[in-house]
Length: 195
Image (cartoon, rainbow, N blue to C red; front, side, top):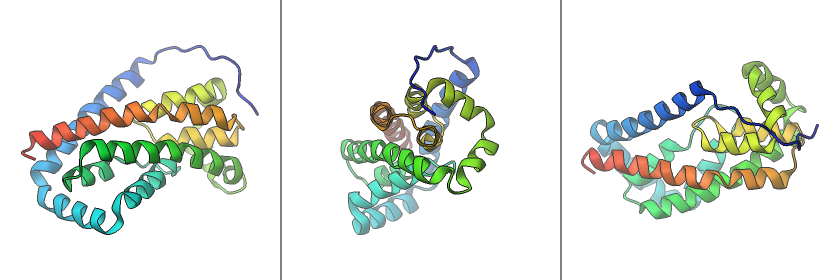
């Protein structure tokens, strides 16, 4: 089913509140990690990035951002920043990987969603989400790419509903400014904790 019709948007105050609270939580978590777990994060992050490099970071981001399970790439960003990697490099790697995860999620949803139990599981677990994606299609992917919710829910759903891949690719580009802002928040929290 294609969802190429134009969408009308209505701002949901609860969603906006959830997004704002999510930003404060991310800032607080990065600060607390710097205060409470600084040494393990610095040592573990350095060991992981020394061994796996930026390709390992990118693969980790693709896995977390393309997984239909509720996962986020923020812990990977905290590890990379804690390891002393330059924020602009972390931003570039995580942005590119997150955009690629949108394509991986669409492909997985298109070819695996209903062929496995994952599609029905997603519909049961997130019943309102399918209606949201039917209504907004690729626009919904762009909205989800910006919000602090698992990105893969939208990309898998778009693949299962056969939204055009090129539209999902364009919508996935919204991950770039989101990643920039999140990396900035993590750096602010980490730095404020004494890093």
